[in-house]
Structure formats: structure tokens, C-alpha cells
Length: 525
Image: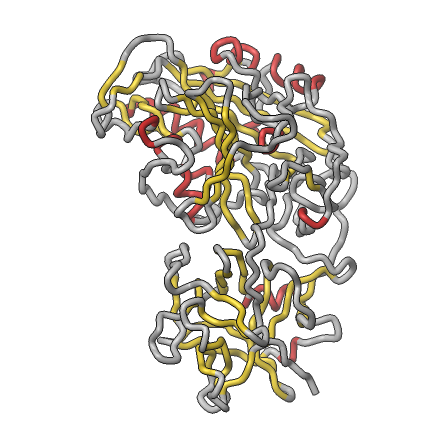
């Protein structure tokens, strides 16, 4: 007879786990104190796609939670059990969660991964509580209407209804209604929010996804398909592969592709300040620069309980634009979940609003640097690409919608998997004195041209970079173009001469020199 007594999801005001899926590289993820974190199968530490060495075989199971962890983020199934029943939350009907008996799937190891994943509930930190996203349901919550659950299918949790907290007895309660608990109604079979006095409404049980051999709890898969360990639980001050001579030494600047940044930070300080964004799970790290009119900003989002780097930029107040935006492309690190183009332009909360431009609607349109289609992981990742800081005035007809769009599509279509990661750095050029008033009436410098550089990096099973192939693209005019984007290819070295930045500064010097001096073809995979 199975015993299932545990109620679910402790509310702990712990900081979100940091996981920067650089694809699949050995570049260092850093915790908020600036300490590098590594661990077997972490996205940043052990990319794994060596065709000569098959990836490690691991089997994952959903196992009953019997002790309270320090952080409840992760992947679960929510069940009720009594006797021979094991009923899993698997759908939604009007105001209640529906259930299916999967007791026949239970083994001595737990519920097999392929079965549990059908009903997966992803738990993520949100403020001092948690959100719960259930497969085929959406975010579950409580809107204050009797016993009913609420269902949110927008892709973005609602802070007024979709936050859960832990109360006495490890019971999961809606944040706004601590006298109610997520329970299973035995007399009218359904999952809903009931008061503790409801005698036919009994506690639910949580099964957590774990590895059968190591017991570690997977977050988002790293690029080799192996779920990562909790990076904050495995600090490691040995950075492994040494970065190039132009390397940055602070915090979030240690990502492979981030250009050399002239930041004004105390030795060892990872950032100047942090900013909690209004977007669900959005969080920014800001570095002051020696130039008081510049900031280096890294935007992050939360996906499957992990904090993921979206992109890093150098923003310049005098240009009202980012001089470069740097980010990674990888099918596992930043999956394409077909989120869509949310198209809600707004001010970047990490940068003073009077520095930013609201964009132009003349012949120059708001041209993305990190494209909307580059970030289809979830709504927060996509919405961060619609910050005004990520756009510049770009000629629309036959440029933004022409060769520039062709190049963006090629980048998206060639996002690698396994141990390869495609890194992108892009930016405007200013070789004229043209200005225009934007939609908010601010005078905005108009770029004279644009550039985009790509580097495809490969790693061995230990996370060491073993190869790199690069190419640059230079569009010398901010106007209409004919032909194909390939006509504007050049070397990264040539682009560096034009933009004045040391790009891909953290790539090992020998590989960096080779990849930047010759034009490879990272978009031919």
C-alpha cells in the first residue's frame, strides 16, 4: 500500500538559481557574488557532443519527495494517492484540475521520465513564493472564487493569482489566501483549493524529477541533453580553460563572446547593481563603466526554475543605443518554443529612461540587435528583446526587412546543438552626423552602417574549447541594399577595425586569432 502524506512546495525567500547556458561552453556561470560555478553536466561547464565519445547515458525518474529541500524549483508531477491510486494533475475543466490514475506506471525507482514528462509541473521562484506551470494546463493559481483553481494560458504568470506560498505543515497555499490549500476532492474528484476543514479534500503528493544514478535534479537540459546540476551547490574557483588576453575579469562579463568592456568595478566585484524587472522572472545585472555615459547590462530570464542569460550589451547615452549586443545561440540552451513576436516596445528598466530612444517610425524603423526570433524560449525572453535599449534606427525597406533579416534568419536556422555553440555580437557604426527626432521627440544619432560577427565554438567532454570558426558581416550604409547578405561577409578582424572593440575577448587566444583572421562559414551547418 502506498503512503502519500507530503504536501508540496515550501515558500523560501531564496535567490533564484543562476544558470547561464552559454551553450554549452566551459565559460563560467557566476553566482550573484561573482564566484564561478561549475558542475558535471552544467550548461556552462560540460558541453557534450563529441562524435567520437557518446554522451553519458542517464535515466531519470520522478521520485516521491519525502524531505523538505532548501529550494523547491525544478520539475515535478503533482499527485494524490490512497491505497492503490496514484492520480496525477493532468488537465483543467472549468474551475478545477482534472486527474488520471497512473498507479500502473509506478516502479520501485519511481515514475519513468517519459511518463512523468507528460504531466510535468515546472516550479520557479517568484518573489517570496513560487509559480507552477503544468503541462497542458498553464500556470495554476487561485483567484478567490470559492474552491476553484485558476488557469492562466498566457505564458506569463499573474502576480495577483499565480503565486503559491508554504504555510504551516508544508501545505501549498495561494499567496493571497493562506487559509486554502491545493488538495484532491475524493467525493467530487478534482484538484482545487480547499480549506483545511474540508474533510473529503486530502493533501497532494509531489514527485520530483531526479537522476537514477546521481540523484541530482535536472534544470533545463544542457546542450548535450544531460540535465544540469544545481550550479550554486557546486562552487569551483578553477575556471578551467584560460580566456584570451583581452579577457574581462568581472562577473557576467566572462562569457565567451562578450567584448572587452571598460568597466569601473572594484576588483572581484561582479556588478554595480541589480534590477528586478516587471517581467516575470526578468532580472538584470548592471556594470558601471569608466565612461559615465555608458553601462554594461546583462538581462536574464527564468526558464524551468533556472536563471538564464538572455544577452549582454554596452549602452551609450550619447548615441541612445547599445554599441554592441552579445549573446549565444543553441537549440538546448535557448530552445525555440515558438513563443511568437510579442512586439511590446518599452523602456529598459536597467538603463535611465532619458538615455533611451522610443524609436523612429519614419524611413528608419526600430531595428532589433538581438532579434525577436532569436529568443523564443518564453514570453519574458522575447519581451526583453523589445526593450528600447535593444533597437537602433535602421532603414526599413530592403535593409531591415531585406539583407539584415536574411542574416538573422540564417543565424536562427543554424543554431547548433550538442557541444557547439554559435555566439553573436552585433552593433551599429557611427560615421556621420545625421540625427532624427524619435517618436518621443528626442534627438537621436542615426547609424551610418551596421555589423554582425559570428563565432561557432566547439568543446570537448571536459568543457574545454577545442575549435572556433568565425565570420563578420559589414553593411557600410544604413539604407536599401540589393543582393544577398553573403555579399557583405568579411573577417572579424576587419570588423574590429571598424567598430573599435575587441570582440570575443574571452575565447582562448590561439583559437581567437584563427577564427577572427579568416572567414569561416558557421552558417553552413
